[in-house]
Image (cartoon, rainbow, N blue to C red; front, top):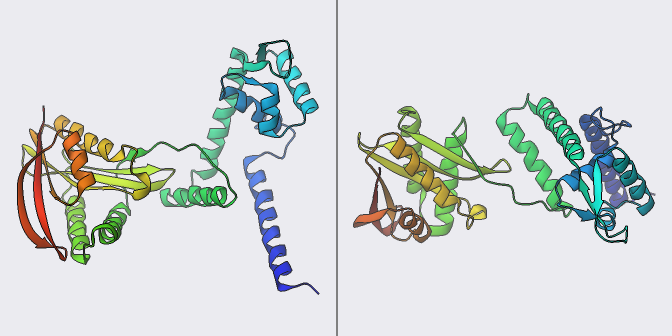
Length: 311
């Protein structure tokens, strides 16, 4: 008799096997040649490693790619005959370093372009939020199975549909958790975001959304206060993105944009207890010009006005 646990595991294993079959068909790795090239998938993996490492011993390649030594040796011999690689170093063949030649680099560059183009074709029908869900699901699989990857860079993009609601949500969640602000703060953020969308003047106002691997990492806004004064508003950096300079980068984007838009000064309103934000403002050239005690968001606070001149 099959136990419940065994039955569950059987279904679990079959789900993974089905996904593996589906995805390998999607990306075209089942054929003898990869991406309609002269190379197998294993050969492309080897070329990719060589392209992204500045010379590596053959023995190390074998360990990292989990390749049989004899199989690896035959592949490297074929690559050398075709002028794709060169070997340099000592007498011991196992420790001699392997490098791609110019022809080898050209070959892998062409394959990487085909791979990127294939992914674009496969996913171009997806809405932006569906692409974000897809990459999020991939990261979840990596993390649960112990995979690691280098930190991806942060990208800054303009706002799009759905962003304002998320900006309001994350401000409400983080300021309640980290500073004890009540829902009236979230209401203020919603009001600022709504006015930005309703009255947007693209030549002199801008929102930046920061992302990493498709995930929301932070935001900031520049809005018109007067013809000569811009206001920096709603700076937020997610806890997972802090410590990498993203906050300063967002503020610097605001400064450059405001200067190019013709403002003479950029100002902001903050609270004395927001120490990390105040440190960023100080480092990017802002000076505190006023402060005033007040009771808002369920707390006794000290509001501060900071300003910075622009070229």
